[in-house]
Length: 317
Ligand SMILES: *[C@@H]1O[C@H](CO)[C@@H](O)[C@H](O)[C@H]1NC(C)=O
Ligand SMILES: *[C@@H]1O[C@H](CO)[C@@H](O)[C@H](O)[C@H]1NC(C)=O
Image 1 (cartoon, protein in one colour):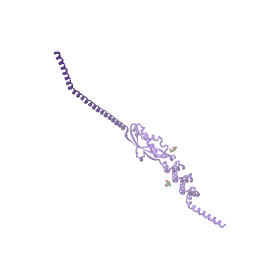
Image 2 (cartoon, protein in one colour):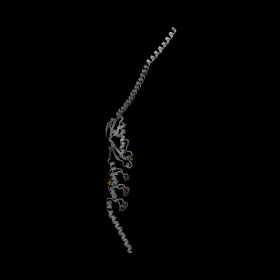
Image 3 (cartoon, protein in one colour):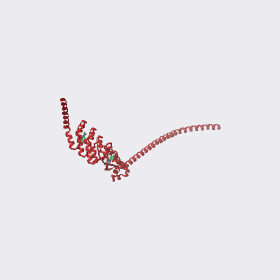
Image 4 (cartoon, protein in one colour):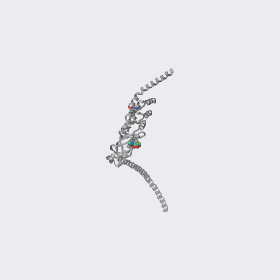
């Protein structure tokens, strides 16, 4: 009987000590949650630390959320996000900012954006306060978008694109680089489809509007608010340069052909000279044969004369 009493007392004291210890450890947190009406029970706090979730982070986040009027975020959701490796503080701050700015952003979307590795606070900020991106991106070396109007004059333009994040498209949507590439492409083709460069110069906003109408922001994380042509300059006269290049090429071809004809003429002249020489040699040869022929003729004439003489002598005699 006495032994049972001693064991019982021992257990009671042990439980009491544990309670006092836990009370000491979590009392502060619990009290903070209690006075800010964040409603986190002491048991939840104990389980939280058993699950290796930092109760300080969760309580702070929960208090911030409740104070900002976001009662619907549950402690369990915060804990789950913490365990998934997300940054609870950042998501709650982003949600508060979105709530203040009356942007439609729910816990699931914000948590997904955070888990996807994008800065959800920055996304909300950009969604409230649109940001301006330069097109083309000067970090990639190019400074102007070069298009050629139909009359052959090149125009060099620079555009500024104002974008706002589309929070529902942020996970899986294409990034800033895609927007820059699409806008660049659109401006170059808009310049290319204008009749003259002076049309574009007179009203640069026409090409900006043409680009804006193409809804280039589809499938990207952004919504394009506006596209503005920051500046536009006249570049080369590409048409004239091409014509000059063509004329130059034509001239080279003609020169090559003339050269060929000249070479042919030289060759045929040399052939003629050779022929002349040959003929002259033949003449010389023929001339050389004349005295011989004459001698021959003479000799044969003499012989004929002799034989004639003999015959006449015979007839005479
Ligand atoms: C969570 O985000 C906040 C605010 O962006 C930052 O100060 C903090 O260091 C982050 N915590 C972790 C664990 O990354
Ligand atoms: C954001 O993206 C969704 C899905 O593509 C679209 O329906 C919505 O209109 C976009 N919001 C804005 C503000 O562009």
